[in-house]
Length: 201
Image 1 (cartoon, rainbow, N blue to C red):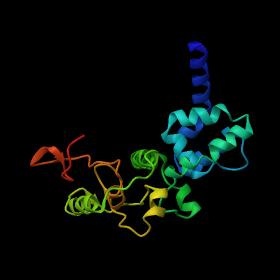
Image 2: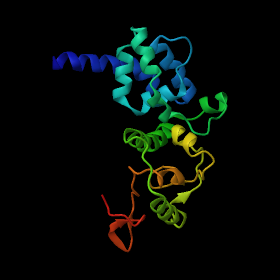
Image 3: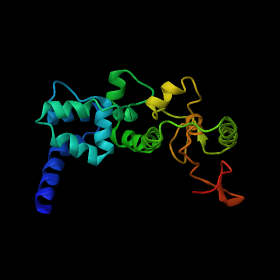
Image 4: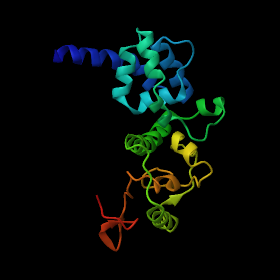
């Protein structure tokens, strides 16, 4: 049974080689669309999830010959966590390099998925205010080049500051409101606390 699983895994990885080898998002979308046998390129969110999440990629490709199952996975709401936040024009989005785009998506999508699993529970106002103040005074708060992270969070907190934390890749104004999240850096004066002043997990 283990040998069969290994053969299947190898076969799926072979099918995905062309997608993984793409240099731009547009190329990856086109190649994945052909692998999945759908009309036209795969959606950007699905393509980025395939590139960032190998288990999802294998599951999707394994059912490519079964349209009903395949389309159900393609329509998974969780795919939205991998959609670019800035929503560029299609030509601009397709021209983006795969490597840097996937690296940023991997960072930013994890927190959103964890938050969603917890029911999008928010921190209390006092905690959020304290966290926000710490972020505003932190040297890791930087402008986001493309503002990738949370498609869902963007809808919940529309119009918020889109600067990111260089240490974790998250949009700071959104992360401070997520009850499931913690600052990744320790307080330089007290290593038992994070820079948010909360106990290190």
